[in-house]
Length: 402
Image (cartoon, rainbow, N blue to C red; front, top):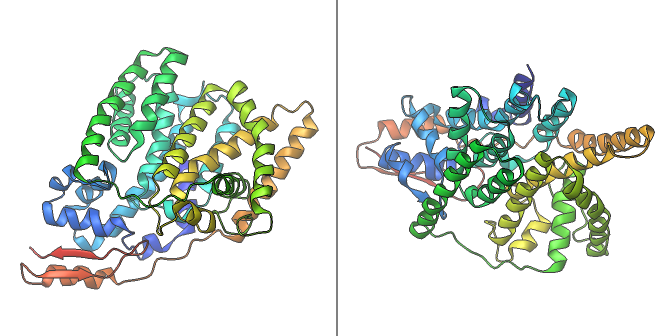
């Protein structure tokens, strides 16, 4: 029931992704075109932007038995299932002992599903970030006692390790979790993640990741933390939307004040929060830090772009969720019940404000995929086609008709 509701929420924010499915960014320009050129299975071995992207490459494998007309829709369905999978897993019996309170788990799921991110909605290009959330839950979950749960855990960790840079972050997290809990199965997961690292290093050699000037500075860092994580998470909006300090008078100073006020909550969580929350927060920190170290955003001054636009939302979503969940947890530790309830009310009002102002995401431009799919299937073999630029980026789809 709750998983179905989560699906409905995700779909409602961009209905056109299912009623008029389009490729998003690399969904068409890389995953579809590479699979068409090399075959769905052959394309699994191709790296892109410095990494193997297994979860994204599997979209064409699933879509292969169907007409290419349905490829965008199948990709989006896969993205939807990966996006809501953490909700189903967190509410499963695996977490009955980890977070005994069902209301607490529902609240965590609500924050995760409702936190807005146009960049991370249903497509398979960014499904890896939702897969990361699932992988973190797998690592901290109790050891599986059924073969199917064991197979599920291994599959999730392998997929995540071979889909982007996440093995670099998850391997230290799994090592820390083993030190804390001393579970033998954690060693299995850690071994899989460590094994994925040299594979991703090889991918980095075969398809180097592009680098742009960072424009790194303390000024930009303060505004990124305050605007893209603390304020964006608290008010459930994408960075740079409404509650934003960048380009305002004394914005950096106000941002620094916000960071200082948030620091005691972060320190308290680092020292006293349940280890599961600490692990999630550490993972979110790792993703945000790696995104800042090597962001893929338009422009020559990457950090400046991050503080004045919604670019790079994928780097900060986990940090936003971790921040809100940490604030709610810290409110539970207030000395008086009325204080806790007041803090929850303030958090709820702030969070709801973003949902009310921007629930639906802008629809994708319709570049008439049905017509383009027909042009592929009816063109003579050997014809080189350039299809319209997909939404989400400036990449055309090139295919040579077979």
